[in-house]
Image 1 (cartoon, rainbow, N blue to C red):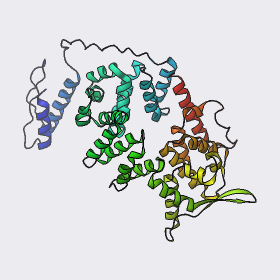
Image 2: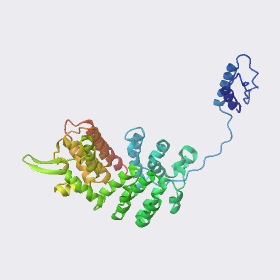
Image 3: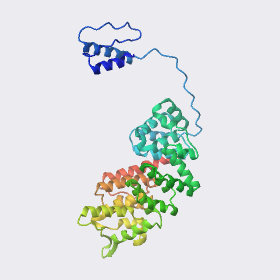
Image 4: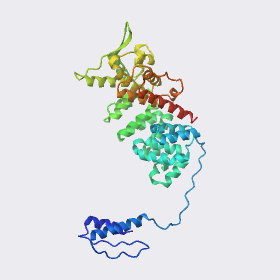
Amino acid sequence: MNSWHDLVTASLIGTERSAVPAVGIPGLPPAADGTGDPAAVLLDRAALLTAARRAGRHPDRAEPLPVCEPDPRPAVSPAAGRRLARMLSGEYPDLLTEWLAAVAARGRQPPPQYLPALLERARRTGPADSGLARLVAEAGGPRARWLAGLNPDWEFAAVPALAGPDAWRLGTTAQRRRYLASLLASDPDAARDLIRGGWDAAGPAERVMFLSVLADGLSPADEPLLEAALGDRAEDVRSRAANLLASLPGSALGRRVAERALRCVRIEHGARGPCLLITPPDAGRNQPDRARLMLELVARTPLPTWADGFGLTAKQVVAVPSGDWAPLLFTGWSRAAVAQRDQAWTAALIGQALTGRPLRTAAETEALRQLARRADPALGAPGALPEPRPDAPPAISAARSVLRFRYDMLKELD
């Protein structure tokens, strides 16, 4: 079998400058010196060696596999297992992380027969979705670690858990995130000091991770750090910091944005009822730029601004007519509801999409898709939402299907 490299070398150099190497195959007599065209002899020997390599070998004595440690957690229900199989087959695969997080939070384990498919899915996503790999390892428990020990491609699930400061100094991004989240819960000041101390040396993705951890327990003490992040060189970091400041009650940025927003959007009560009048920020004569700036302003405005400023509930605000600006306002409010994790506005916007004017733009359709994936799953319960218009577009049916899927998915785990 060692002749394979020699054959490849001879083919690269050329048979006119190199002799065709002999091929030695265990169990067969040595190949006779070839006659005729050297190139044909080389190809014949390569074919023979390829067949021998594919034919395998006599079995050696196999060592027994290591024993998997027991997993005391109860298994999910059969219905939950069937739903996992549907997701792995391509039905709402983006909800896998939510399903796995719910399984881990409930102290249950997924059906073991699906662990190889889950590990392979996490391997294929790689660093692009490290959260999925972490959740597969966490929900999979001992069996996932056992399988990872048998397949080097799944070694991410076999990485030993680091605890304490070692997780921060030596751990993966997911381990550092878990340590930072636990420290933020027990000692917020120490967690903020850790972020400030590691900010300059961290890459953009890790700085976004820092901010995402802060988002789970945002407090006024985070404002100086977030204000500093507004000047970060990475756009994702600046955007995340601005969204967090918008959702932080009483932040200086939130007050500035709110004041500007109420100058650009005002409510007028006429004979036909209230309507919203829009005066977009000045961007010269370039109307597309004015619309873009208006969208960014609405998306960054703290959502209580509108209810407090107009004296209306979220449901009433989104129902006020706004003419040609309606698609932009729906998209901006939806992005704000997702970023600020505001369930009241999320429910109001979904209800408006079901019963109000038809969605007209791709941006609105995508905004509704994101809302359906971030909304309280209880909105998927029968009767929780109003019935849509008879002529509702496919995007409405898709959003309702996602909400119902999520509702049933989590109910099966309880």
